[in-house]
Length: 76
Image (cartoon, rainbow, N blue to C red; front, side, top):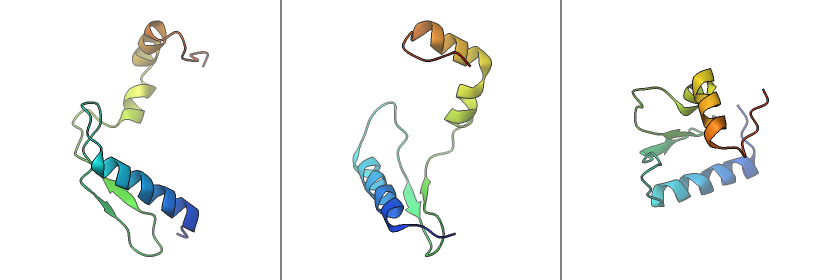
């Protein structure tokens, strides 16, 4: 897969930021894997309850978030 230079620079900038940042609500970045010609990937700890996208897609959580956060667009 062809990786454009700007996309790679943006990715590496974000990875560098995550490697130096520490917050209770952020996962610790373990590392970055990248082979020439492939897309780079960030290595994060295993999340026992699944990824954030799957969690957010659950209807009960979305409606719960919308009730507590009126600024969210929950029209879908």
